[in-house]
Length: 71
Image 1 (cartoon, helix red, strand yellow):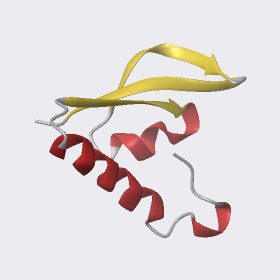
Image 2 (image 1 turned 45 degrees about the vertical axis):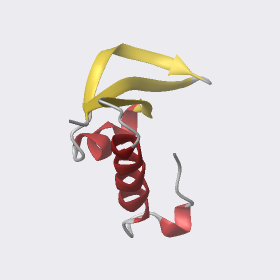
Image 3 (image 1 turned 180 degrees about the vertical axis):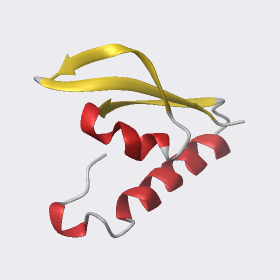
Image 4 (image 1 turned 45 degrees about the horizontal axis):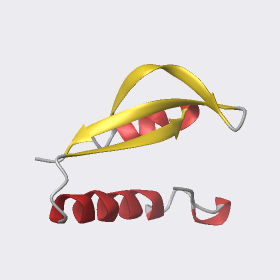
């Protein structure tokens, strides 16, 4: 998930994430996971995602796998 620079800080990312979490819940998923760029971890933590495992590189950028229970 990415938000264009001109739209950052306006709640667009939060709205998108909440819609995706709600959709996953409605489809019966018990959990959600994502790969977050390390700098974005605090954003996802605000929505109850937790880091899982060690930092890793994806496309040359440091990431963490993050999970959240949807029940």
